[in-house]
Image (cartoon, rainbow, N blue to C red; front, side, top):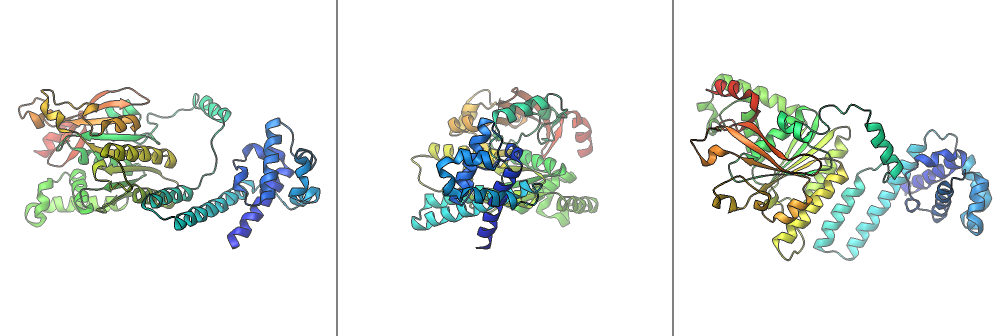
Length: 434
């Protein structure tokens, strides 16, 4: 009951502060439904009405606006009590955050009670999503058109730097995309053995080096196997030597790996390798990560779509995938982070003379094409043609980019290390690996 009393006191503080300084209403992002007490809801609605009319807010104007409802809020005596109860308005933001926190707790309880009354598998998924969303603190509501346009105007004179998102570690790809953008769902796809997991590990490591908190959801490989692959890439150690490190690795390679392990212990990179992962479990881990490291940028990587456990009943796989990609896109927007989703391609690629993938090769491609903000295909010509002149070269085909150009860039793929490098480092890299 303590949080209930604190919430009511914060409601009084918000309402009283605005009566003392009506200009605070300009920075208030609360809505009337977030107040628990009915009288406070009526009062705040009157504040909103006066603000929209451009009328100054004070006890007199509020009394006039309330009219016959003045008695329902405690009369003029309660308005004076509110205005006299606030010693300072400097803590206004704290007051409204407290009101918001109390509202989220009430909403959580209400939704949980509704589920208890009518439990179901679909209801459990819905409850988990709703509770996760309520757990994320929101300091402001939807921006007004004026606020949005003012932000755009200000951005015209701000140097955004070369990247507006999280670096991919591939210079040419960064130049085309500006990095991995917050709120984007980014699909990485390719046929088996094209290097999809190696590429997403490269993204994860590159981002973590820039103090980005990375949550890597691995639905196929265990955490230990991914760490070994990542260490091979970082330390230039042949991945095949992990079969028997004592026998196959040199003392220098072992020392390099120990150094690599020390580096990985210092970066905010976490692998989640539970065998059965649902949208709810993924969402819950992201919520925890954001709450634990609120001052960091965040990146989520899911490897891969086909192994996410779907709860609920769907008529077919296409409908299930449509729900999944839509939810992931909403998650990216809600949590303001990029989500990289690894997808498989259909075997249609293998039936064509030209093996370069197309968007129609995506399994259940309709919803993926629609919900993805960017679609990146990986293609290696030397996989199909051992005599290819593009040996150790991977094509990164940006087939879709909602807010930018499409096209192809190249990178080096050093297979023995499962490592991606910028194309201009090719010769030095290949020479050092021989």
